[in-house]
Image (cartoon, rainbow, N blue to C red; front, side, top):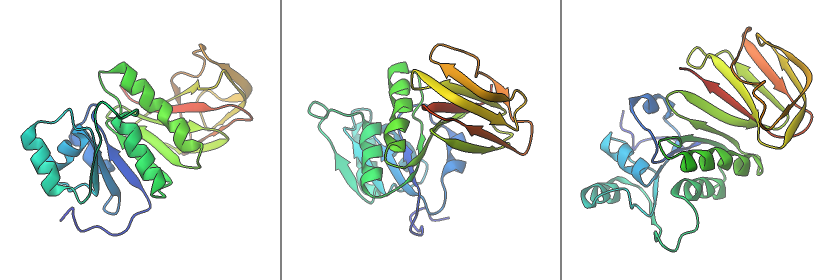
Length: 220
């Protein structure tokens, strides 16, 4: 298809500068608003995609790559690497939120820099706080934040489901449709009770009374 000919979208997909590969392309829908942050923009352009928006300080791309980004991106926002306070991924998320997107997928937000990976996971809280359905996706993981009830269809790509609290504790946890159910349980930071569960029915349901809970779908 011609990647420049897409219909108006309800979802923004952000490609950023962590681990990226061919696994990422199926996560791009025909109508998604496509954002490339720094090296993520170069990755998209190199593989024939014209980002709707490319942004960042672009300190991770060379002059030739920057030229291709300028030629391909429909919109370009360049930030000073010294003066900016936010990471390129956070700039991309804020831009998507400011444009009204309430479904956002961040691709390539996990990588060898653990500080960036952890910061990007924490960005999910910022998205949820304004009513956005956001997720962080790489080849082996899909991560989102649950604050009340989440329904998870069984997914052969990610057979394991782990639950880790973001707040100091999460109370009233109910798991339905899982191999290891929970009833009115509490998880506290530092506990591993929620690691490596498996959805045993067509859909797994996670319910909580209070707190914020990371849901991590994963595979080896």
